[in-house]
Length: 102
Length: 102
DNA sequence: CTTTCATATTGACAAACGTCGATACATAGC
DNA sequence: GCTATGTATCGACGTTTGTCAATATGAAAG
Image (cartoon, rainbow over all chains, first blue to last red; front, side, top):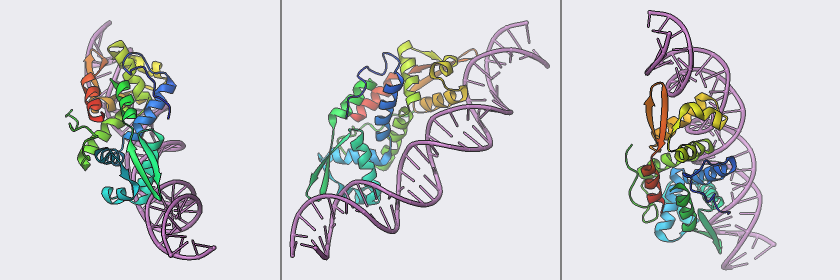
């Protein structure tokens, strides 16, 4: 995943593309289920996809879909271990977002 | 607008309500037009609603709708001056968001 | 009070989104 | 190879979202 626009949001108007990219990443975060996923994984250091349907009360396809979006946005990183998929939170990515917002 | 959940996102799993509230605020930010609004207003220090339709290439009702969402989320503050509506960015609100994310 | 102009609200529409059941794919073990 | 199991994809559905034209509201000026 490429870096976010590096200029802080507050210093000069965003151009169309930067706004599009930043909105995409924020949109990935702007969902209660995905926020819970991130917080669960962060709290544990890592998390297995197999545990999330029960923890979230969502079906496996739904969880898989949310995980994909978070990975695509660079917020989660995925690692395959045997048949299981493990995820970690990219603190760097979150820091990037904060750097843009403040 | 009330404060966001104060625990950083990364230390313990969010409960349903906190996830809902935080997602709502992030959703307000997760749109290219609204991000441009925020960046324009921040860059100028303040901004008049009358200028945004032209700056954004959107109709007046559309801009009004986006401004409402940003105000509802506590990201913009609105001040009436005669017949004009002026907006400023709540840096505190953005700082709150960053505090939760990092 | 009437007119004018800035902003908000309404109603409608297409596009995007979250969700699920069913199914396909992939990996490990037999 | 076949089977079992974890994960991803597909198709469909109802809901939410962004957008606009039309209209209503609000505030100043004449």
